[in-house]
Length: 312
Image 1 (cartoon, one colour):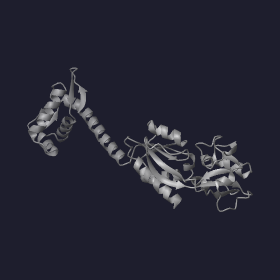
Image 2: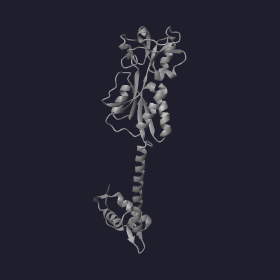
Image 3: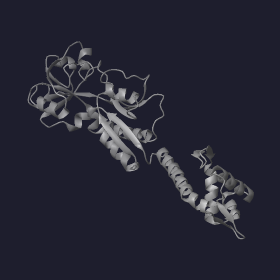
Image 4: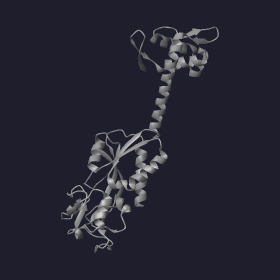
């Protein structure tokens, strides 16, 4: 039902079915033909039209002729409005159908920086090929702030990691994408550059390049678990810049596997091997207790496919 004010200033419920009956009669010029198209009796259609006339002030909308009916002046005035309402309802139904089928709509997501090296771009490319009508908006950030924006309803999905510790499963649903190992980026001439792997404890005396002076909540959090506090010599936020500092011999840096594909040739990557250092887990997070947007599930599928390609 759609509420509408009558010409007399009162409010009445204007049935969209009355409008459909009106449009059918106007189109066919016949109550009998309109009734057949609507799968109703002629008397039922007459009652629909009478109800519409009452709701609009009582003036007749059709002149009854010996053969069929013809719109009155009032009927001609109603016609474009009834057509507009019918058109809007049709567009609404189509929009809802498209939304449910992930053919249209908006998906807002965020991701941490290294996920943007390969995991997220490949997922976006696959998703857009399948759902070109969905608008994607992306923002980059750390896991903590991304989860806050997810909980606040500002994001529909977030690609996050366990870098800073366990993720809050009470406020978000976690969809596992992959586990990634850590590498240490060393200057090409470093004594450990040719080793098949290295334990973090062997790097306790190194100068470190990190995105924060405080190891907690960063990749260097793993060093704290090994009983030493890494000496952060240079705070550098961007991954390409970190590699420049490493290549110049100014320190070493931890590099997650997701970023390993973009490492420059004058930097040596050595896998970190420590029994007490778990692989970093990467998840797609959605808000717990909130209905997901229809496009979230197919985008999640694209992220999973991208993760399998990277780890396969």
